[in-house]
Length: 233
Image 1 (tube, rainbow, N blue to C red):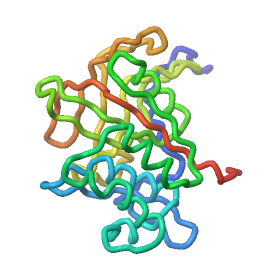
Image 2 (cartoon, one colour; image 1 turned 180 degrees about the vertical axis):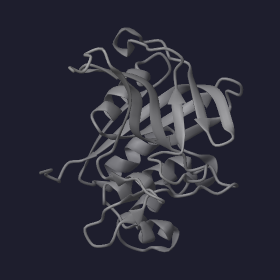
Image 3 (cartoon, one colour; image 1 turned 135 degrees about the horizontal axis):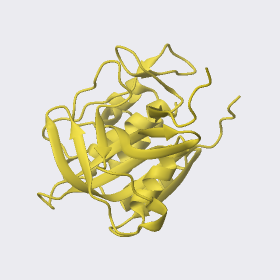
C-alpha cells in the first residue's frame, strides 16, 4: 500500500555536532566526547558569556576544561573570552557587546546578527537555526520588561508535511536551567500557530518553556556563529 503523501510528522532538527544521550555531548579533535551544557550561577548575570562558552565547546574552538577556569587562564581562547566579556559577569551584556567581543578575538568564525524589536530578529533566528547554525538568542519578558536573558539556540522543531517544514519552536540551551538527559535542549521558545516570518517584521510573542518555568517573551536580538575553517565531508 502506498504511503499517504499527506502524512504529517513532528520533527526536531538540531546542530550536527551534538550527540543526545544521558548527557548532551559533542566530539572534540583531542578528547573523548565532552559535555556541552555549562551552568550559570544564581548570583551572576553572565548568561551571554555562558552561551558563548557552550558555543565554543560545540564548535571545538576551546576546551571545556579551559572555559570552566577562564578567569584563571593567562593564554588561549578561554583567557581571551574572559578578557573581552569578563566585565559582564555581574552586569550582563547586550548583543553588540557580544559581536564586538567576537570581532576582537579574531577567531575563525563568521558572525552575523539582528538586533532590536520589530527589526526581523524572529526571521533571522529561525533562518539561522534552519541552516544548522548555533544562534545566541536574547529575549525580554512580557511580564517584566526589565528581565532579559540569553539562550543558545541549537535547533528548531515543527511539522513536516511532504517537503515542507513549518517551524513552531526553537530549541535552546539555557545556562540558568539544569541540563536534561536524552534531549538536545533544556528549553523551548514556542508559538501557538504557524507564522510566515518572511512577511512579518513586528516582534512575535513566543512562550518560553523550561523545567518549572513558562512565560511570554519577545526576542531582542540574535547572533549566529559559524566556524569557517572546517570542511564537512
